Amino acid sequence: MAEPETFKIRRLEISDKRKGFIELLGQLTVAGSLTDEEFDGRFEEISSYGDDHVICVIEDEASGKIAATGSVMIEKKFVRSCGKVGHIEDVVVDSGFRGKQLGKTVVEFLMDHCKSMGCYKVILDCSVEKKSFYEKCGLTNKAIQMSKYFA
Amino acid sequence: MAEPETFKIRRLEISDKRKGFIELLGQLTVAGSLTDEEFDGRFEEISSYGDDHVICVIEDEASGKIAATGSVMIEKKFVRSCGKVGHIEDVVVDSGFRGKQLGKTVVEFLMDHCKSMGCYKVILDCSVEKKSFYEKCGLTNKAIQMSKYFA
Image (cartoon, rainbow over all chains, first blue to last red):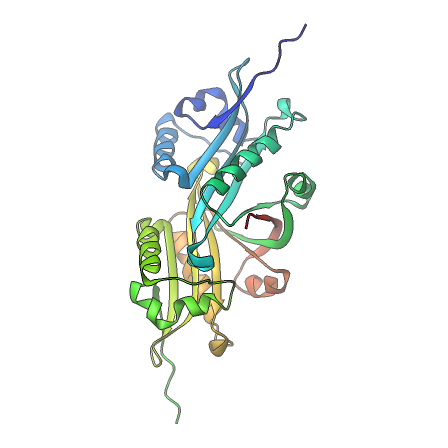
């Protein structure tokens, strides 16, 4: 009989570098090389924003591997009577853990955080191929993304 | 003979509330009501991020009015070897000052800031109608925006 799967969702911890967090990001985009010092430094920088920049992970407790992640940054605006907007970024599920609703769980965790922080909306950018996934998460497409790469 | 127009681009100052800054944002979206205390508090919060959250304005020095504005928030990531991304938001030109390239000047100011901060890219979301304006600023459309309003 197979062991029951035990997934735990929580905020990123500094020890997650050894649990495949960076390798997982490499399934989304160019992760690049990173020394332990660089990882720790960036972890501290992001942590200094407290609830305004949250990275969540889902750990597969059986294997001790990070199975999914996503982040959200809270923007403080003047519009909407000093409203706040959540920007969701870098959502990815490990290819070995797909089909278990982990992506939806990550997005819902991040949206719940935005709601608890008093955001009036949450936004994210994605490829057209991901549109139906995010619609299942309750988001709708209203605008386009423009970008410019410097490097 | 008409006076020469004197536009000055700079970072938002706390005294800009009295120069029509909030009314200008009202031409972009719902600005909402804002007491002086709320404005000052949000100004201090954003200022505390230093170069990581910059709001720029163009002042028409002849009239002392804010003619255009835009903001950028720098996101610190783990991907791309701890790369940074600039998120441009809330770009608007006063209806009485359009056709003077002020929007392009704002976007270029914000992109220059991102470059000087070491960002590997800059992104923004806009309506399809604004696509050609941002293309003139050097950006291209590669993705879509998804959003969910809580309120």
